[in-house]
Length: 356
Ligand code: NCD
Image (tube, rainbow, N blue to C red):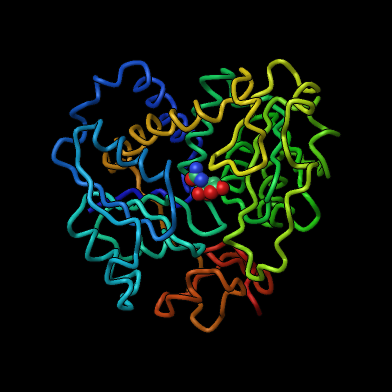
């Protein structure tokens, strides 16, 4: 059977994203039109990591489409606690369901699950790597609230190193014309090189800044993120959030009237709650729109209209990915697969450069 997986938005052309966004807009206007679109379908949510919005908005989406869901949000109460590997768990659950939605702490886990899944797989966040469905949410929000996805100066702020939402967002927004990025973070939390390279390779520009204050006036979008504490190996390295990366009413005063302040949520301390009512702050709308775009995505994925090739590179069993958090270093049966030419081989699961 032909299956379409959503592992990385960039596996698909921008037209496909735009179709999902347009469908999401239509669903927002007229949700009842779609209330039987997934009658008889079952979605399985496999959440190995905590989630509020992503999990519940997927479940809401499937219920509003007339489908049903099964799943877990605590792997400790499943056979994972007995040592079952990802391959077997996803193989079996995919034989019960029409769609797997998976969130996992390791980069590349959704791709790994898709290799053996009997149904379509959607990546609901793979470690500090990517979060394509949050990006679809962000695109729908910008489309509705700003009316465009191009010609913008986009500030992304916070833990750019470990924040998967930012990685996916930058990889998507550089595909729309004339978007520029301002990367606002401390030196330790800079955006990973592979994302910067992707931005540049797609003809977009970025600059780096060390505080919100110095750049807020030039931004059309300010995308805030929290410190991804759970992704720090050495908890002693955990830095406290510097005031330079906290958005408050004083800093907001310096922004354009039309600024869109976004945040994938959960917010911790990086946006003070007193500005929540400001019309520039879109994060609660953004969370709401997530359910519409996920309805659209479920419809499109179940149409099986297009299938993404999972491993395009050469398979190289003897080369190990250097990223300790890559799924291939946890699920050892997985075939290594790398893109590019030696010595610059890039792991196809997590996008890190291979150790040669
Ligand atoms: C994000 C995630 O899980 O990456 N949350 C979400 O899905 N909306 C952001 C975060 O946890 O910081």
